[in-house]
Image (cartoon, rainbow, N blue to C red; front, top):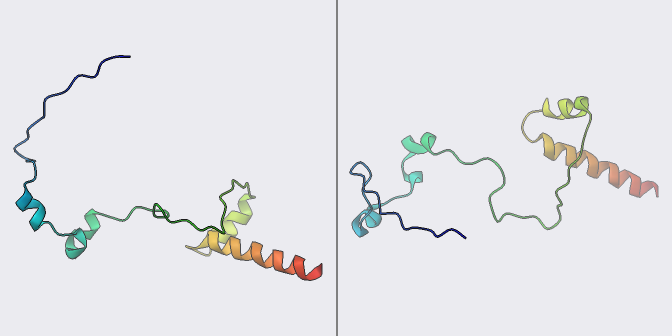
Length: 95
């Protein structure tokens, strides 16, 4: 196994290391609405957010089915789930 060598720290006057005073003065970007566009939220479900009643699957659907639901705008995946749940309820009623 190759040995790791310690690299000397790189000092950059344009980006100095933070001091204790810098950390004490720091504020979250949410306090500065004018900067919010520079720090957009990441898409997708937040890490650690899980629903115990859901299971991820890979499912191939016909293009026209996907196009139909996407045409309704955001939330198309949720609408697909609602449609499937409705079909399951109907099947359970019929026996």
